[in-house]
Length: 92
Image (cartoon, rainbow, N blue to C red; front, side, top):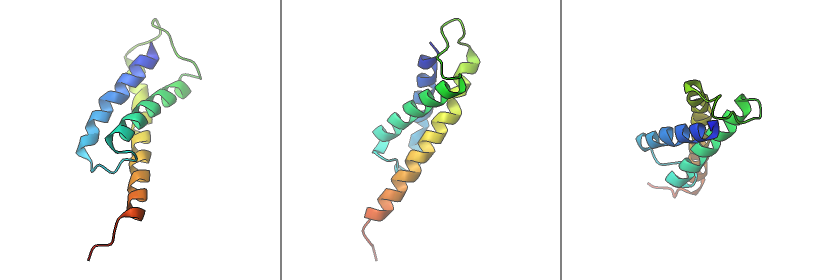
């Protein structure tokens, strides 16, 4: 059950990606995938390589996903910005 909470928190934070320039690797869909993967992987790591069940899921489980989501979105934006700079034409 915690995996659902982590992924939902990742999707909720992904909605705030509209407030930064769209330079994510893969566009907004790439940011969506990065947010989901970051929240799920980070939650899995913090929980000791296990997924807590329904009885062990609480409000703190939602907050576990925040750093992983932000880290994954940051990496996706940084990599997308870097790769876009390499392919951007020179403008006078």
